[in-house]
Every structure is written in C-alpha cells, then in structure tokens.
Length: 298
Image (cartoon, rainbow, N blue to C red; front, side, top):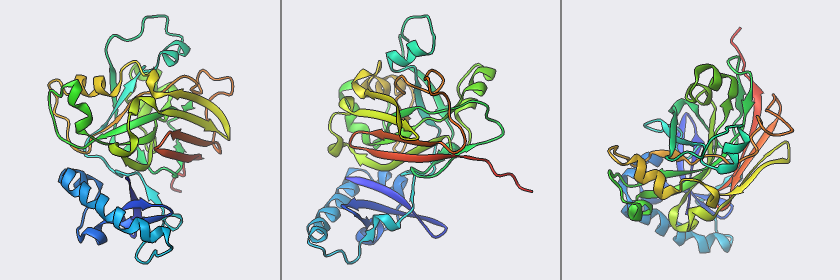
C-alpha cells in the first residue's frame, strides 16, 4: 500500500494510492487522521485502510472512479510533513562513499548517526533552496524507513515488526558548513534539505529492504547508482543499535546513508541554481526537486 499526504487548503489530506487515483482515507474511514495519527493507531487501522483500498481497486480499474481524487490534480507533500522529532540519519554507510571522501581509514566499526530537524523536511516535488548560508550544495540519495511500532532494546530478529514502511529520501548537504562546524548537523539541516516521499510504502509491499536499487540524476545525468545490499550497516543493525537504551516511537524517520557519486567527488561537481535533482529507490518512487535561489524580503 502506498500512503501519501497532499495539500488541502491550509492543511493536509491523507490518501492511499489507487492506480492513477487517490482514496481519501479520512472520508473512507470517517476519521480525522494525519499520517502520524494513522501510525499511532497501529496495524488495526492500517488494515482498515488496506481493506478500503481493495474495495475500490476493482471499481477503479473498471473506470468507476466516483469519490476518488486524481493523483495528477494533487500537490503532494512529504508523507510526514513535520516529524515529531529530528530525522535520524546514517553517515558513512556505503563503503564506496567512504572511499570517495578521501578518508584514509578503516570502515566505521559502528553506525555513525546524526540528525536533521523537522524544519528541513520538504515535499517530493518541491524546490531545494540555495540560501545565502550555502556555498557548496550537494545531493545524497537514500532509502528511508519509518517506525510504526514503539519499542526499546529491539532485537534484530524483531526489527521489521517495528517498521511501518519506506520512502525515498534526499539528504541535501552544504559541504562548507559541514567542514566549518566539524560535524554534520548544521550543514545538513537547512530549510528544504530533506525532500522525502512521494509515498510511504508499507512494508508488505516492499519485501526485503536490503535488495533495492537506488539512483540519483542531476539534469538527467546519472550521478549515483547502487543497491541497498551494499550498506555497511543494514536496517536491522541500525534499529537494534539505536534502540539500545533509546525508545523509538511510531513516526520516527530514519535515513540509511548514501552510496558513492556525490557532487563533492563527482567529475560533474556540485549543485547550482536551476539544477534538477531526481532521486529514486526501487518500489518507493522518485523525487524531483529543482534548486532555486532563496528569495529575501525587500
């Protein structure tokens, strides 16, 4: 099942994809939910959404689309437009990316964590802002996952039971700020630096998250291409490590690191205003974000 959030007036609507159409989840279930509240309700409510989708799929294929919304008419937001907590990110989680950074050292023995604030989140087709704080703007395609079941001290064998689904993620980075501050939070946390979506694809539809192709293009030219099997630390390790003493809650978002080919190491270089970034993960969908200059008030 592909869940999504779309802009609706001054707020958001919650939907589920049905071919080229979208089922209004709240209308179907007679509820008033957003994505976080849906995840809080757990598997039982997610099951009701899945049943509602199945009930209209056959009708939609037969051309009976009354009550459904056209996907092309909607402006999608990030599946979770604002997380309750910072996004947890993995650094140095693909061996080739470690090497391309000129780091003459062994691979990290433990997962390397940093975070991005909720204010960095933007939609799957919204612009990335090249602000006055940025000197060297870079891209990093990643697979993200969302916690669906609260837990602590989660055993590796139980990790998948705690994951609601997966998304495509773009970890935009300001390289100069990273180096100036000698850590990653500042350089990766500016507004619009976390495009994600276009859908939250539920775990049952994804299958094995460690066998997904991912790639990134800039202006139609491939920059990054790999598979999630090449992660140094897999999803099970990430969750079991961080939940060791830390409670993970429904709605928490994790980004799992980027493969090689980032602009700082690529012959075609870094991002400029006007560039278009396409980021994709197999089964999860594609983000498309244009780099624009920040507009300052007069």
